[in-house]
Structure formats: structure tokens, C-alpha cells
Amino acid sequence: MPTLSDLVVRHTALDAADLDWLHSLVSDWQLLADLSFADLILWAPLQGEGGGWIAIAQMRPTTGPTVYHDDIVGTVAAKGERYLIDTAWNERRICREGDPDWSTGVPVREETIPVRRAVPVGEARFLAVIQRSTNLSSARTPSRLELTYLQSASDLAQMVAEGRFPFSGEEPILVRSPRVGDGLLRLDRAGRVTYASPNALSAYRRLGLHADLVGAELGRVTATLCYSDEPINEDLMIVASGRAAKETEVESGGTIVQLRAIPLIVGGGRIGALVLIRDVTELRRRERELMTKDATIREIHHRVKNNLQTVAALLRLQARRLRVPEGREALEEAVRRVGSIAIVHETLSHAPEEFVDFDDIADRVIAMAGEVSAAEAAVTPRRIGSFGTLPSLIATPLAMALTELLQNALQHGRPKHLQVVVEPTPDRLHVTVWDDGQGLPAGFELDNSTSLGLQIVRTLVVGELSGKLSIAPRLEGGTEVTLSIPLPTA
Image 1 (cartoon, helix red, strand yellow):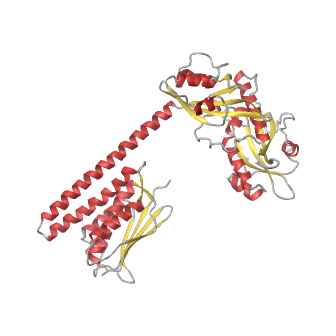
Image 2 (cartoon, rainbow, N blue to C red):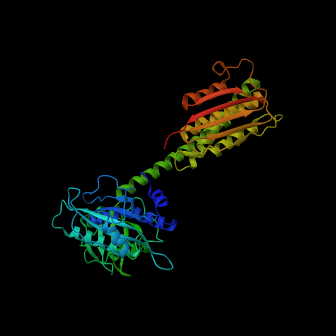
Image 3 (tube, rainbow, N blue to C red):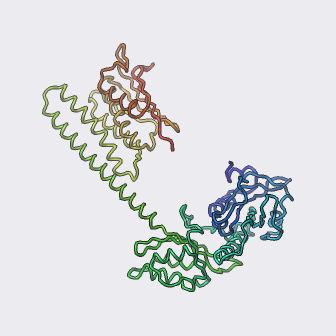
């Protein structure tokens, strides 16, 4: 399905500022659909002499039955085909006239709302028209809650037509903001509650409220519940009074409630506000548990790193006491292997998640290999390309494999140049380690190699990372080792 941006750019004359306004509108128009108990379709005028309309966005209500079970986005309507859309656009007003439409087999009431964008200077721009379609098949005498919803939807629709919704310049709405069904309060201009939905009232009961909310000043009541012995949060008073389009959270007695205020500004004046309410106690408790878990995991990585460094120091001390060159060399190789693992755990101890910037790890492994290379070699390995961010399950074995390959090239190849070339793709990571040293011995075969280092690399790359490993001589002289490692899909 084409996106809103694609349809606007290809088929309309709207500019970038208009597109941003429409994005803000559709990111928050679930509110209008739920309050209206209706489907919403956003129609934009087609570019060109013929005119007409194209549907660029669609929203279904969560509070009532839908009218359109199929997707309408991308549908084109000729000029004159949809009378109410043409009328709302030409006369710059909300159109509610007309009898219910029975063409789909169920009665549907159609309304249209012109979408206006407020501009700093000059006359406001009209960008599109919202078609609001209500399924009347389950029509009955509305309750007090439904009447409040419908009145609020009417006020919000008028704000859309006047260019006052969505709110320009305000903070972006959180992805997990309260919805209409979570709880709704309607306030008058003075910030007093004129209606409280059952869910909203239950949320305040859990905060410790024992009286009725209707008729109470919401800001004062909320502050009394939550800030008896502390300074009052100014954001709370602004949100709870409905004076600004903001969000906040309040906590009392172990209960955490999220508040979102939507000021109702109709005809140039503020007539009141809607306050959406959601009990997020369980959600925040889980988030805190995850934070504690993350901190524990980072501490474990830190302690593992310290233990590995202790092991490396003990091995280094033991190597200095040995007089057998082969034994000393074996212990020094073990020190380097332990050190490469310690580098990964040190990085993970500072990361909030089990992902690391492997470029930093690779650079430290490369530097460590250069430092321990023979002085007469005078080779400084280089990295070309970026590994990016890798999960720890890949980072640890890859760091060890890289350590082995660099050390093997420096010890046995005696190169003048040594490079690590990285070429990532969306699904695989290609790494090439090449040198211009002595090259491979005659008759070399990877499968039959007795080198402990190469056996470790093969086990890590092929066995643990499910990758591919190849070693071949370079045409220019030296050796080229290629790793191809699959990356986890998002």
C-alpha cells in the first residue's frame, strides 16, 4: 500500500509544510475517530486540470463498528462524484446535510470536514477534506458517555476546520498515549469536570479519590491526591486544568496514571478541554523491572571483564617465569585471546542493551595486535569500512576470530601492510583480512591445517556464527582471509 507521503508527492500540489501538517493530523486522528464512533478517510485534491480527489489516509474507530472493511487508501474520485467533499472544500465548512446512504447494505451517515493549516502570515491554507462515515446499523438511544463523546468530536472537528488541530509547535504525542476508551474527562473553561467516564473515575479511585469528580476542579483534586507533602508539579497543573496540549504522569499510593490534555478552542476561544486518562501502573512496573535487569546484566559484564583481566594477568605472570620459548609463546597467545573477550565484555558493561558498536572493539583488537607484534615488523594494521552495531552473540566470537587472524598474519606472514576491510550488507557481514607477507605454505589446505589459531577461527566462524571462511593467496602476494557472517533480521 502506498504511503501518505508517496500519494501526496505524486498526485497533489501540496508542499512540504502541508505534508508535515497532514502527518501530524493522521498521527493523532484516532482520537477523532473514536469520539465520533466513525471511520475517517482523508481526501486530498488531485493535481491537474481535471481535478478530483484521492484518498491518502484512513482510520477505523475502536469504539464502534466500521463501515469500510476494505482499504480505501489510493482510491480516486472524480470531481462531482462526491458531493459532500466538494461542498466542504468549496464552501470551507463542515457538511452534515444529507440522508443516510444505504448503498453498502447498512445505513451510513456521511459528514465532511475541511482540513485547514494555520500559517504564521496570511490566510490559512486548506489542504484536504476528512470524510467521516458512521455505521448506523446499531443505532439506539445514546448514553451520557456517548453524548459526551459526540459533542467532543464535534468540537474537535470544528478545530480541524479552523486550523487549530493538530496542535502546532507542541511536543510530539507519545506512541503509548491514552486513548478515548482508557478514560476521558471533559472540563469546562475553569478546569472543572463536567463529565467523567467510568474508566477515568476508576483511575482516580485508585489514586485515592473518595468523592465524586464531577463539579470538582481537576488540577486541585489531583494535586491534593499526589503532592500532599511535596512541591506541586507545574506541568501537572497545566495538564489537569486543560490549558495546554501536554502529557504528564501522577503517582499516588503505588498507582501511576498518565494524563493527556486536549484544549478545546472553538471560534477563537477556549471552551474547555478533554483529558484522557490511562492507568499505567503495571506498564511502569515492568519498565522498572527491565531497567533493573539491564543494570544487573551490565554489572555482570563488568565483573566478567575484571575476572578475565585477572586471568590474563596471571597468565602473563606465568609466561615471564617460563624459560621454554614454546611455553611462553603459548601463554602469550592465551593472554591475547582472553584479552579480546574482555574487550567485548567491557563494551557491553557500558551498553544499555545487548548490542555494541563493534568498530570500537575492532579498533582496540587491531591496536592490541599491533602492539604485541615483533618490533622489527613495524606494521600498524588498519581498518577500512564500518562494522556498525552488532549483538553480543556475534561480537564476542567475531572479536576472537579477528584477534587470531591478525596475530597469525603478523607472526607467520611478516607483512609490510595488514588491513581489515569491512563490507556490510542488510543481511550479511563480509570481512576481509589481507596482508602482503610471505603467503601460504605450499600445499596449504584449510581443512587439513594443524594451526591452533586457524582451527579456533574456523570453529568460531563456521560452527558458532554459521558463516563462511575462505583463505587464499593474493595475486599481489600475501594472503587473503574472507569471512561472510549472516546478520539477524530485524
